[in-house]
Length: 240
Image (cartoon, rainbow, N blue to C red; front, side, top):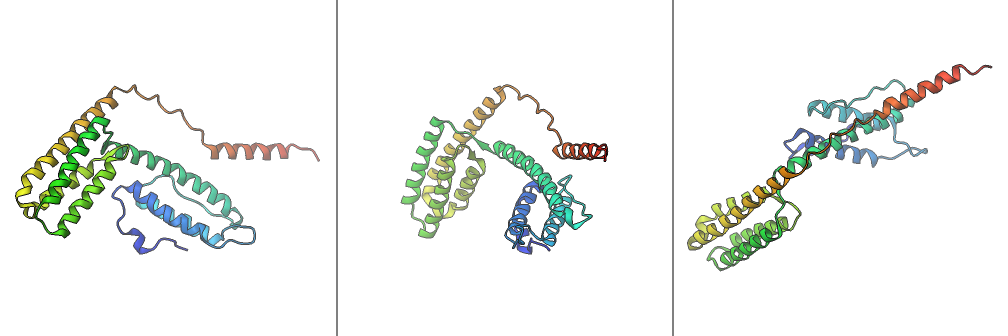
């Protein structure tokens, strides 16, 4: 049984890990919404379908060590627990990689820097509001500025928002007419402030002490197998 639909593959992230995380989340959500039996267990075919689907995704998207092996139907729930444990392990790594990548593409703006940018934003809104441009274009510009302000309020500012604002102003050159030069200067001031903040943010990160290396995490699955094997050995030695 497959849980993913063709439309789920539309607009996937470019990064393999992010694409895997998105599709796995959709598949598992649909799996867990399925009807359960009288023991509150999901049917064999649903669990097997989910694991088969995610194994195929992992192979296609270069996510290692995701797989399963079924021998008896009675083992399906144990196999599912082991499988999802491996998937969660990879998802944590994917989220960590994404967070570090997002950090490179963002900046922690200082209080004074945020105030300067907001000052320029107010000037920009005033210029656009007074410009003799079609209302539809004016609304579009104001909405993008509102998106920019919402991003500015976050702990870290996504640099893509700055590029979006610059591109939108450039695309509106014909509509802005006489206001284009003043608007361009304001946007340049905003970009310059963000650039300075980014350099200072990177310098602060450079001065942080190096992190200690992670200690090895024991393989819990191997530990469980060893405990089971030891228990079986003890049973063999019990006299009858």
